[in-house]
Image 1 (cartoon, rainbow over the protein chains, first blue to last red):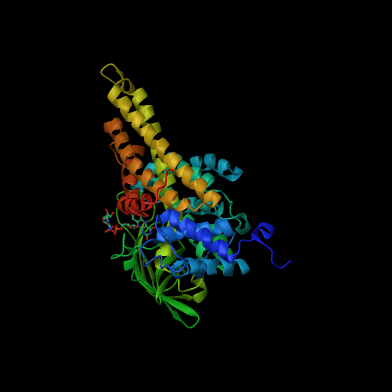
Image 2 (cartoon, each protein chain N blue to C red):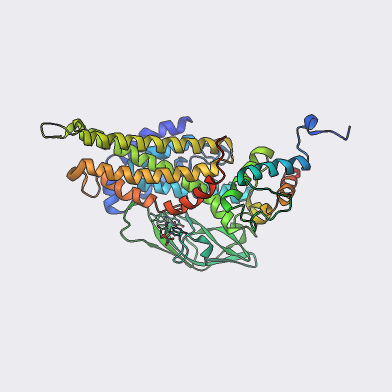
Length: 91
Length: 370
Ligand SMILES: Cc1cc2nc3c(=O)[nH]c(=O)nc-3n(C[C@H](O)[C@H](O)[C@H](O)COP(=O)(O)OP(=O)(O)OC[C@H]3O[C@@H](n4cnc5c(N)ncnc54)[C@H](O)[C@@H]3O)c2cc1C
């Protein structure tokens, strides 16, 4: 009973969030992206693109990225973005 | 479209009447016009009903913005500032700040948004204004320039450095140390109340700082400007529509070489190009607003595209309109003369055409037409 899958609960698991994000980023940047790649240092992500990620998270995961969470650091890697979603979702 | 924005059109048309030209020449909008429209929630119609706002969609508010922009770009500029202030508070503020400030903005309060400084125009990373914590207060110091509507506003949303990061703080204009000086003789949107804002050790409660601290300037600015870009883009649609109407009326009436101007094919081409510019700007805006209303990540790029398309088309279309009206439109205060001056400035603000091109060029690299 505790081993519910996404299909049953409708709530994406952390691994699923991470793979959705990697898919989105690879499609948008046309580059290979790993979960710990620094998206800003690699030049793949601008602040305009970070804003797209904000809106994507809000639409896909029903969270609100506002106030103090609007910092680029939260968007530095796919791992960080995933942590942000999990934190906001549980809040 | 929600009922209030439909009903508001005859109201605004009545209030503006034929006075936009005189306001432009005087460089001043009547204060009671702004507080009246503000108290009806019309200056920032997307503010939610939970705060006493109209809760309009981006698309409905956009069409209304175009309507107002077609009558008077100065009034529309004030709406852009008020709406951008509201959006910034909505996006960056916490629940208590939203409740307080958004209610204020739909009950007659007026706000402006200050990013630009003497040495920080297109490059906002050069911003020097500081917001420094001091006990239960913060102290705000800096020089802001060209803040639209600051001459009318009672609160200004000021962006500045905060520690290693950045923040936005709501500063009541009545605070000691705030000095607002009008920008003399602006080229366009002359009655929009553009002003330079000097802040010298302005002390406000720390609770006026929106949201948390440690935010990133680029992301804050990008978030805030999104609304401003959308609003300017729709305002440009309004400019284009007023030009279509003015050119249409004049080209039918005015006769030269024995026939109405519109019968001359070169004039007809002007009419067609102007119309095509208005339609394509409208489509770009409507697309961006729909993305906004759906919460689609495409809204970010679509908004830049709408602003870029709208302002470039408006500048070109307004020049065409002056060309067709010729001497009939060649005096300050005339609708097409205002359009010509107002539209040019729309290519400069909220990300100039060049800055938009830089953003769009990067976005284009990711285009996928498969
Ligand atoms: C009518 C009006 C209303 C305004 N309202 C507000 C307001 O409400 N709040 C506010 O904070 N500010 C406001 N501003 C200021 C406005 O945001 C700035 O004017 C704008 O950002 C451009 O900055 P600048 O004028 O310093 O030009 P600069 O940044 O000096 O640019 C000069 C020229 O160089 C180009 N340029 C600059 N950098 C690059 C680059 N990297 N690549 C290519 N070209 C480049 C620009 O596109 C422009 O053509 C307003 C300005 C106007 C005219």
